[in-house]
Amino acid sequence: PSLRRQRAVRLAARLHYRPPMRSRAHIDGHPIHPMLVPFPFAYLFGAACLDKAASVADRPRWYRTARHMRTLGIGAALLAAVPGIVDYLFAVPPDSSAGRRATWHGAANLSAVALMSTVAATRRDGTRPTSWELSAQALAAGLMGFAGYLGGTLVYRKQIGVDHRYAAAGQWQ
Image 1 (tube, helix red, strand yellow):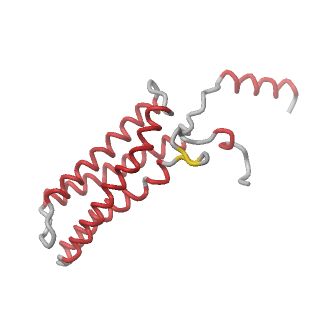
Image 2 (cartoon, helix red, strand yellow):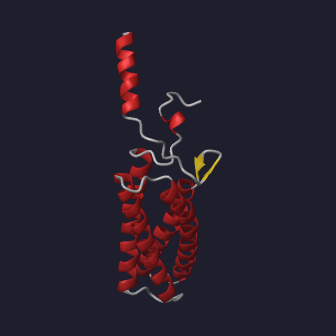
Image 3 (cartoon, one colour):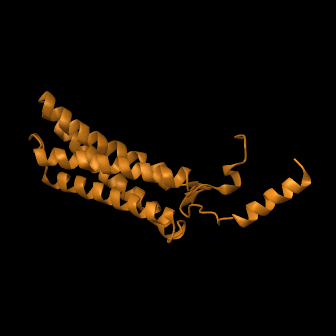
């Protein structure tokens, strides 16, 4: 490339500079929130699936396992929410499309956890879940999927939490 083109590229980069949106809750540069979110999703989605499978297969002992998974999922969700809130408050620009996405991401996750908490409060071991409980769990699973999509968009498209020094560095070292 010519020197003129190189200068034009550098000028364009300076004009389009956006301040980095690095995670404020991190361990040695690695954001904590994305490390933790697979656990609540797996536990809560697994609890919903297990409750449905137990009702279809008539396996009442599986309800207890679903209850344990739901309890672990709610606890893991509360734990994952802490670094998520820190990033929301300190890394995401408030008046931006990323800010709107992050708000929807948090609201969807909070709604899913609230639904699963309500189910956890009403469920009893050994009893078949009511259609309301199964529906609430299915809705919660859908909300978690939607929130996961938004979270992925924040990380990959908006590069929230990405250390920009290495985001386009080329080869992994």
